[in-house]
Length: 372
Ligand SMILES: *Cc1c(COP(=O)(O)O)cnc(C)c1O
Image 1: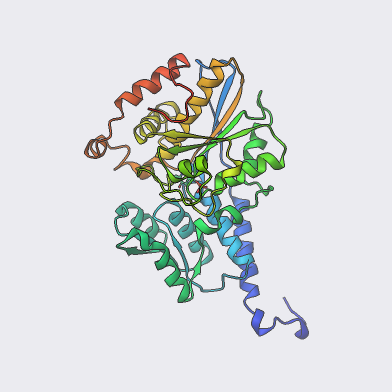
Image 2: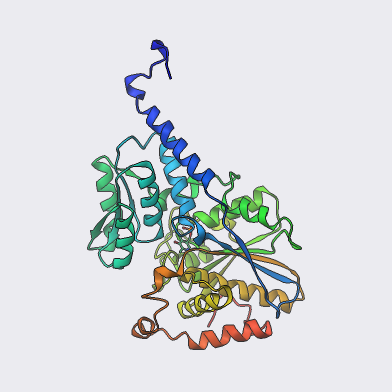
C-alpha cells in the first residue's frame, strides 16, 4: 500500500498504525467468537416459571471476564493509553487476570497480574500458561499500589475495578444484556421477570441494569451476593464507604469494599446467600447440567430458586435469567473437594437437602432478603 508523502503519519502519531492493527485484531477475535449459550433448565415443581442460565464459561478464556477484558483493552486503545510493545498490568487474582493474559497474548503484549501472595498456585499457573507474569505482593491491601507502581514505570493499567462499569458499551454492541434479551425473543416469556447476577467489579450488573431501562423493560435486576458482602451493606444503606461484615470463599464476587463500578441505583433487590448454600448449589448444578460451574453460579442459582418460589407462592408466571459465570474445573481442589470443605468448616449437606426439597416441592424458601 502506498501513501502520499504528505499523508505519512506524523512522528507523534506513528503509533496509530499499531493501534489500528490492534483494534482490527480485537474485531477479528470478536467475529471469530460465538455467542454463549442460554440454557433452559426444566423445573417441574415450578409450573409456568422458566429458568434460563447463560453459560459464560464457554468463552475462550473460561469466564464472563472475557467480555470485560476485551472491553478494557478496547477502552485503553481508544483512549490512546495503550501502545505497541507496552506492558499491560492489572490487579487481579482471579478470572480477570486469566482473560487479560489471554488478550495480551493475542495482541503480543507483555502482561503482569498483581496478586496477593496467598493466591492459589493453580491461578498463578493459569496466568503463566498464557505468557503472563504474576507479581505477588505480601499484603493484599497493597495490590492497587503495586499496580500503580508498574503504571508509573510505563505500564498500561487496565484497572478492572475502576473502569469495568464504563468500559462496556451498555447501549448495545452485543453486551451481555442485549445478548440475553435477543436469545429470549422466541421464548414464551421473552421479557424476564428477573435477571439475576452478582457483583465483582459491578460491571455486569451496571450493564444489565442500564440496558433494562434503556430498552424500557419491566424486568427487575436481582443481585445475589455472599452474606454480608460490601455490596449488600452498601446497597441497603446507600453508603459507598460500607465494608463487608464477613469474608467469603466464593471467588469473583462478595467484595470486601464498595468498588467504583457498583451502581446501586439499577439494582432492584439484593439477596444474601451463605457460602455453604452457594457451594451446595454449585454441586447441584453439576447434577442438573452435567458440567461443573464455579461458586458464584451457585450463589445466583440459590437466588433464582428463591425468586421462583416466591413467584410460585404468588401464583405468578414468567421467566428468570441468570448466569453461569465460570468453569468449575478451576475449583477442583477447593469448592469441589469434600476434604477442603471439611478443613474449612463448611458443611454443605443441610443446604443440599434443602435445595433438593425446593426443586422437588417448589417451596421451602421464605421470601426474606437473608437466608438463615
Ligand atoms: C467477576 C466475576 C463475577 C462478577 O462480575 P462483575 O461484572 O465483575 O461484577 C461473577 N463471577 C465470577 C466467577 C467472576 O469472576
